[in-house]
Length: 110
Ligand SMILES: [Zn+2]
Figure 1 (cartoon, helix red, strand yellow):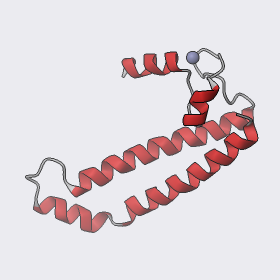
Figure 2: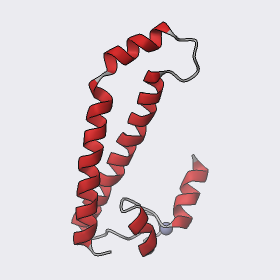
Figure 3: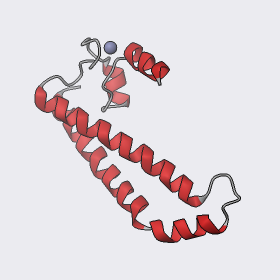
Figure 4: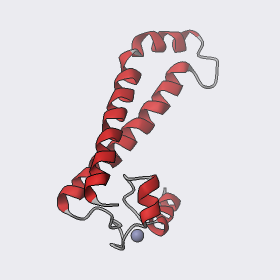
């Protein structure tokens, strides 16, 4: 995938994430009050919204980092081993910073 296409896709992902984050942070008070009322349930509305927000924020960070790698001219190289990230992987996840091997190593460390 060339850098122009990657940048376009990342830009639209960024806009989408910003929208989601705005929606998720837009109504916290009502959600929080409700969750305090039924604190007995396992996964409250607030917890769910928070979990979605965490995912969106993490995703946004990955997208911003990928855009930075395009600026630095290192987009598409694994940040750990420097080998090219396979094209198919970038197609599926343009924000991917690591090749499959390094990503699974990274996930095992967590
Ligand atoms: Zn790697």
